[in-house]
Amino acid sequence: MTPETCPNCGAAVPPRAKCCPGCGSDEATGWSDRAHSSRLDLPDEEFDYDEFVKDEFGPQREKPPGVRWLWLIVVLVLIGGLLAWYWP
Ligand SMILES: [Zn+2]
Image 1 (cartoon, rainbow, N blue to C red):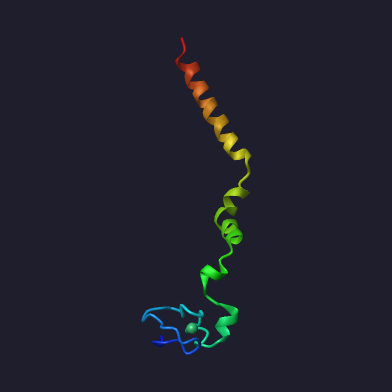
Image 2 (cartoon, rainbow, N blue to C red):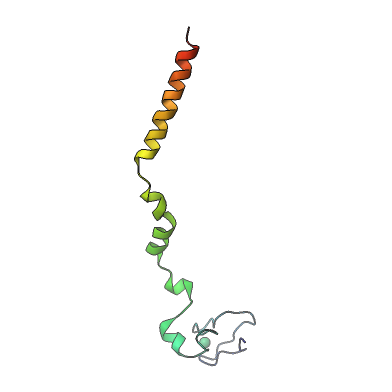
């Protein structure tokens, strides 16, 4: 249950709020002042941009750079083959 006012800091808590907008207390932390220091489950506070970028773009970066060139060569060879075939 979400209390109407935060028992920790006294801020008004919106009915469907997952945590207190004032101090970050939530159901998981028992609306206690423990949340105030640890700030659990607050993405805007804990958001680690470097980690996010690594998670989002890491796998693509790990692809070997030669793969793209290999495809380019394959396409060029195919085009060259078609030209040689059509050429009188
Ligand atoms: Zn609070």
